Image (cartoon, rainbow, N blue to C red):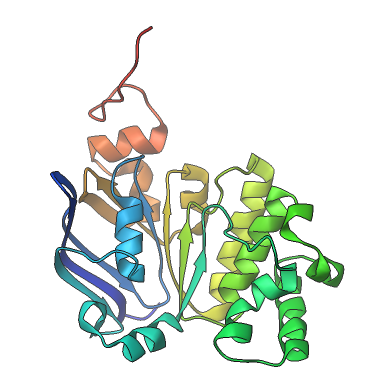
Length: 258
């Protein structure tokens, strides 16, 4: 791992009406590092990720990607920046109307105007890297199991050899065995590419498997960060409760009584 910083977030704020979701986030992701952001529902994980991706405009703060402030870029510079990114979406986000290979090579077909034959071959090669045979290429997403759809989503995320990859709840909806398979594929893909990875999840098994470092987001603030090896014994009561899945602790979960 190098000491350079791929993503630097400074004093990031975002509100929706009276609801203050991000409350001055400060966070760095080192080049070639795999950082996992932990947090429960409503903690601000998705808003933070969408802000980094440029899908949401923050109210205040800076987001530096490889030293460039992504929040004041021109459209063309933003497009160049996006070319560095790969993304595995929570629900797969595959296009039902397209065969698997076109899903994988979508950017190459639409943005780069790659020849269809070349794009299909590239898709097949990338599918092989995530353990899918070439006959899968011509199937539609509806013909795939949930685990296979995740693999296709991962293939699409890595096909352009991005330098930064984002993972949004990568194991949601998968059984424990398939989740572990996907975690192994994520770890291997990031390592093979030498990429920087930023993941958001509430799945502790996934966090333990794919992270070099962990940050805990609670009510829009980073309340702890450190090496994943220290996560189990962080000394932070909030982190301890979340990591060990305890009902009792400072994180109060509302319970509806019938």
